[in-house]
Length: 274
Image 1: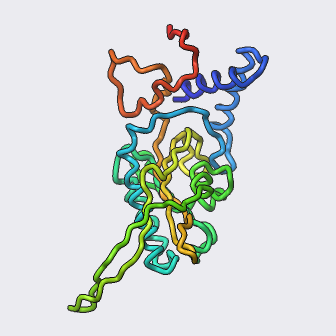
Image 2 (image 1 turned 180 degrees about the vertical axis):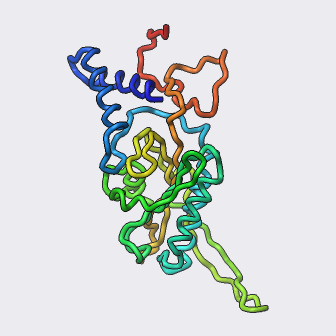
């Protein structure tokens, strides 16, 4: 993966350096990768590779993030706009369960807006798998995820959610052996297309690897009944062992679910691979 990232960065630097030589571009690219992977980082997700990815083959792996986001939304709506019904342990249980849902997933995170969980001003429980062990911690202690450099949060927070999907629900709860009258509520739910895919980035302070993330929004309703962004649930897919092969698809060969960079090159049509 390191070699492939270096090749990609060589190409990117070569394109962006007006008048620069191939040697200068390669030198800058190699220095960039070396700095990111070897030096201590300060926390954040701003180190991003400008690569296009076809995520279609990964859609089956991201459903746990969507389901978790919608579950948390329902808890907020049923508890007067608050997540104080939860405990820290419940949040961490959710992200651990997401990671355990599929061996392909490297990590999972829930990050929420201030005041929705009154125990903390910022809270982002994160779980990830490494060397067969499941680790978990609060990444809000590593960096401020609400700034505009956090690729898996900023995009969702700044969207307009006026048209978020609404569903009317009528539920009959029980009291002892008695069924209570039906309670009608309006629920909000996120769909696959509501989520955000990041470009490949180095996650400093979370998994400390190159990855891509899919994030699904969490909602509440404001005082006027409009959808309000309250956080996200996300899954991470590690790129360490995935080839960044941007060549066009050759129907004479078979490819795996992780060969998602195929056909994303920006080379002229006359370019040949030797």
